[in-house]
Image (cartoon, rainbow, N blue to C red; front, side):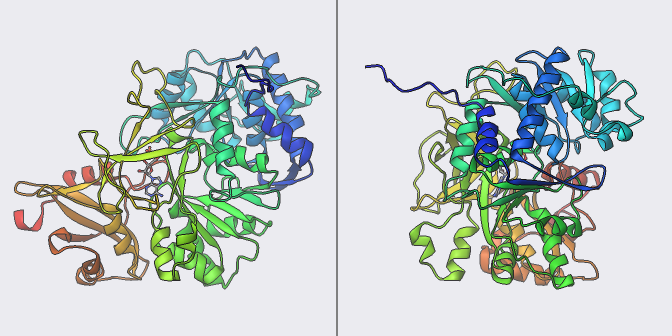
Length: 542
Ligand code: ADP
């Protein structure tokens, strides 16, 4: 029997319609790229997004065209976030922290017809343009007085919007149409394009606002510190309006004082990679500041150190939601929320569970498998390849011939993980980063977390260095906190309780800097290359 219910396409335009109609006055505070902090709301954002769609159509943008967007988290970016897919086009988010030639490659590969950018990013876009023969034009997210000199032929966003009345409708397409594109940030290789559909974005946002995930409501004010261009903005651009929450958009200033200023705008939920939070916590301590509004902080993208969880929870009463995900999974796949068994644990033990990345929401299915593809037990001990499937997980990368999943829909994340009896996932490593010594694995993540628990350590990275007998041996690189000089023995002592003797690093190297990728993660690839180029040899091979 055929159902008799309405066929209501799950398109992201329905999210902004809902927010504008039922939560229209909820405030969006934004630090503009030009400087001033501006205020708008969902109703006004919707009208301006309609004008964006109208302007794009007038420029000849057709459904299915790809429009690149390189911009910080601001109100204008949010207008393009809905205006571009609202016109039926596909919003391709670009990360300005990537190298220029990589950006040109990505924009060319995705087939960007137009580029939208913030005025301060004009120099980058100007360098990309000559390599993009199919590009029709550039739109700068600013007003006439702030138009950048570097892009003489570019169109002005505010001029375009001023010419429209917003009296138009959203493109009426299928929910399976492409909505947005993000490229993997290339931590482990060449960037690959992930094409989200309207449907995958809507379903993923619905999963995200559930109480055991982001747990968003209209009483929340969400500040994505994670850029909208990084891994689909962790869904915040969709899940906040879906829940009717307010938003605070911090713009491009990521220093602790600027972020604190924006948190003071009533933010209840914020989200970013761990590297953002360490300087903020130091700043709060030094200035004797408090976080009166903040209730939860989502931390993901790389492993969250225990010290960060303890500082937020014990010193500021802010709950940490450790999350895991990847560009290919829309991006969030798991959240370390408290099942009743976890809620009942003593504080110490519960923090141990929070170091895991938690369990998935409905619409995400996980398993761990060995190299031969056999399912591994959920005992919290056995490590395997983490696999994921669901309507928010990619099937195939853009312009690739073959599917990236197996016959049952499983996508191999490339992460090494355990799953415990409660279904909590612990990420132990990335397969490319795992240190293999004498046929056994040593978790670089565990080693780094133990090292940064030393009060004098600012950052740590453990890498495997080739060894003729053991295959690889671990070496630990440490960036000490300013003015501190911890000894190698003290660091090793920190690791001893957590590691077998043979797992301890062969050497602790003190360095001034550890290389990062464009998304703020430690680049093991670069670090290993740097060690190799410097002619580094393990102590017993010297
Ligand atoms: P890239 O793969 O290019 O770094 P992504 O942002 O998509 O870009 O990164 C996804 C990867 O980040 C995951 O596969 C995993 O290795 C890592 N990751 C994400 N969240 C966590 C976390 N909470 N703990 C440990 N690793 C994480």
